[in-house]
Length: 127
Image (cartoon, rainbow, N blue to C red; front, side, top):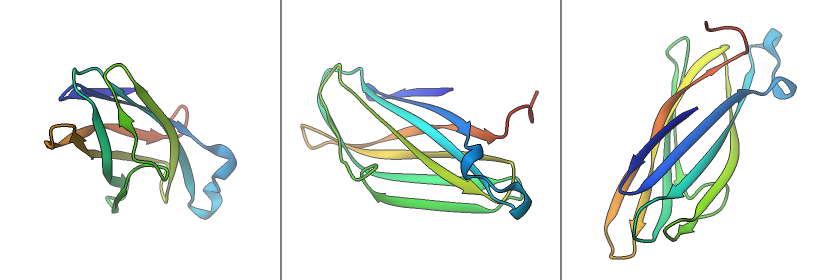
């Protein structure tokens, strides 16, 4: 599990191997990741967009950008959380993800809440 806090917004990510969606013999390794976004600060903020950097073990990098997450732009008051699960498919059994969420505070301030880097791997691959 990876976690970081910026401007009172905590981002926690828990990745897992998604065996049911994987086809290793075809070079497809699916991973799920559960994200919790918590407002531990004193001011409300809204997640406006996302930017992910996904890298496999061969160094192939894909960047994903878009509005919100899972079709939503959650507005978080202090003490509130938003959780969602998503996934990524790699051509290798090992990779990393990182990125940031673009946030908008009630006072109009925009800031990036970094998504901590985390490893995507099949069970028992890393020691």
